[in-house]
Image: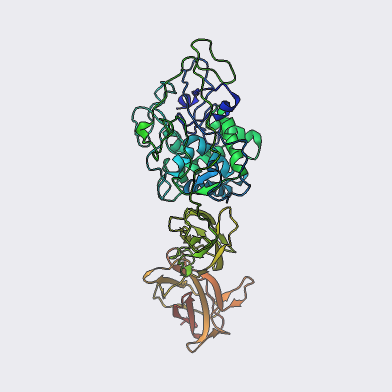
Length: 559
């Protein structure tokens, strides 16, 4: 596939400075094709407008709305502008939540990348118009697939099918798929399951956004460095026009944006794969309506001059953003988190917590706010982690406003710790939950043998003492055990004579703690020694959980 991915695609060039910035990758986007850990190797995510010499010419027109670079009402610096703000600055709730969740996830796993969510928003705007204006279901999956043109060599690269039509429905050639436009074979490498539904779905905005973020961070890039940022964007589409467009949107979203309800985002108003016939009131075109544009003869090369004959058509100027935004219903803003019915958080060491932390987002009037990215963080001296590993998890709340953390898996360290829930990228008071890890327990303990334990004065007991612990009939692994040579059946305090263990210096020791059963629930005690006192003595073994067994030891002179 390297040779196929190495082909560079050519997109329509423009003839004015403004139009050059408006070029985007909506109609022929292909997916990232960087090899993890390797160099760029001339491969790109969404195709390229810089053709190789001798490669098939594939000019195609496509459309995106250029952000209003000069507008009297620039968005402010807060992401919490009201929904009635500038229409172009509005990002659908699920799409915005996906970008922010991806940013938080990567900040935790790869902090050196410094990925801003606004970069994902910029690419998402160019690739899918923010997933068709936020037309996604409650899980963030597009109502119908977003497909690029057939990559059959006619106007675009020739890439034979790699997924047996699983993602793009085409068993002959590949097509770019989903909100971030991944080629199926590249999705096989970079695909993610960000919404924890057990699937890596390129048509899901949460999965696609995290995959795009990890792709942009490949090769140990630090996106806070301009050179690395440019390289990352160019790896997605090796086109200077594409780079300029994405950077323009990036700066636009950094100046400010706000959340709008799903399905109310702005769609391109000119012809393109998301709106083939131009302006339309229909919610979103079906994939079958998206056709590959016809190649333009002798297209102009980026940075060069068009061929004299035949003369390519002059592209129309990009539509200007509306000066008066269409009326929208202001999206509710989360002002607080509330406990959504979380019960007692308790587990034994090494076990799973039966209860999961759940919170609900509400606005100032107490109404639920959905599609909120919530971070759950384990705080304190504990080795407990979330299922799948890690002490941090970001979950997007559902339409009922509830976000539920992954299950907690207790470690071996006992005691209390805190699970803290907070809203991502907003100053909202966090909610803390106290969790407790208790000792592993056993409700029964027995000696595994029945041979009489005897020793002569001043010698050691030839047979070791072995016990087995169980809890509710199951093997009790890692249970703490205390072994004490007691004074009598009525007095469980340590004896002052008779059989004993030895300490590090060889001195007598008649009580041992810190012992634990093995994976089979078995414990073999250290050697026991007899002093010069003869008689019958008692060894008491007690487990965490209160299970006890008493064993007789006899010291007598040889017959």
